[in-house]
Image (cartoon, rainbow, N blue to C red; front, side, top):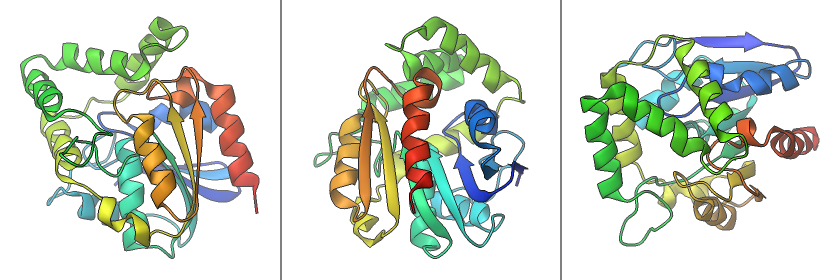
Length: 253
């Protein structure tokens, strides 16, 4: 389990999304490491963290929790947000406040849920990953930043960030996709009492803002900030708006 600690101050845990690693938080490190002790988690099987067995949402949340301080704020993005929600259910006393960026309790559309990804598109992506890893990941980078201002430059930056570390094995990526496919936390959301900031891009196609709107309605202590023109990675595409929302939330009593 690889977790880097940078900075001084209040503990803030950062959990990245699928296929990425903790280097994605470079903009946040530069902005917040003088105010907070940042705990940069590499999800097992990604970055410098070894894969674990069994590999499921419960064991990921437990493995990460065991390597963190006794109390902290947590910021989870995409898959990292799902892990943060599960951690808040398993260890509610450890977590002070949550920030979910592109958060969702359920990634896949169902008969009673239309705030996710169509299962046919999801399976098509998974199949392409095995056939052409590099091209599929490049398409994934593009999807996360499309419609953003300076999208070509940002996509190049994201690709360079992710390739700065050894890329995850296809097995790890498939196991991560299985977590996104097989988990639905909607029935458990009412059990969560943490103050929560939800940040969503209004152009996000992977975790639509409607999912964050649902979370705002069903979490007891949640507030939603939608960033206009942003897609799935607002902390890269719209850093000023993102940092403003995050700073105000973390500085609040």
